[in-house]
Amino acid sequence: MRLPRKCSITHYADFIRIRKTGQAKVGRFVIVNTLADPVLPSLRVAFVTSKRAAKKAHDRNLIRRRLRSYLQIYAPVFSDPKRYLITIARPGAAEASSADLKADWLRQCQRLKLIP
Image (cartoon, rainbow, N blue to C red; front, top):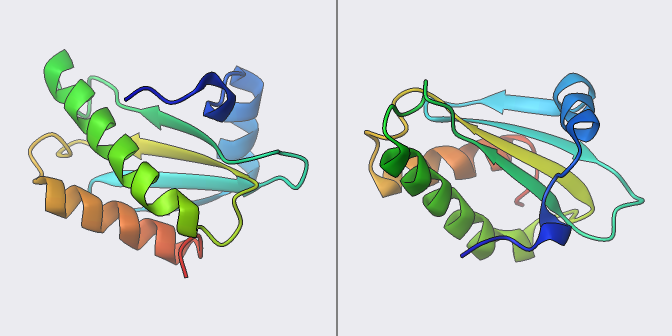
């Protein structure tokens, strides 16, 4: 399922600002960046899967689909939904099982205090 445009980070300047001034936690398969912004109406997200994370487009798309599904499940329980969230896939994410990828993503979100 595709995320609605209103939920996506669409400006490059926002992406850079989040990466520079936001909080980040690095896991085995993902890097999660976040920045709270009380002006936002809702959660804004971006998923980055480069060729370094997976050589084949099929594998990159699979990683993005998995990450989107985790977000759809856990976004309603986020402690503060008015924030930006960037998830970057790391090398090895394509070879990871869905359960391992999910556990790593959840662990990073909990370290950032997004999920109580």
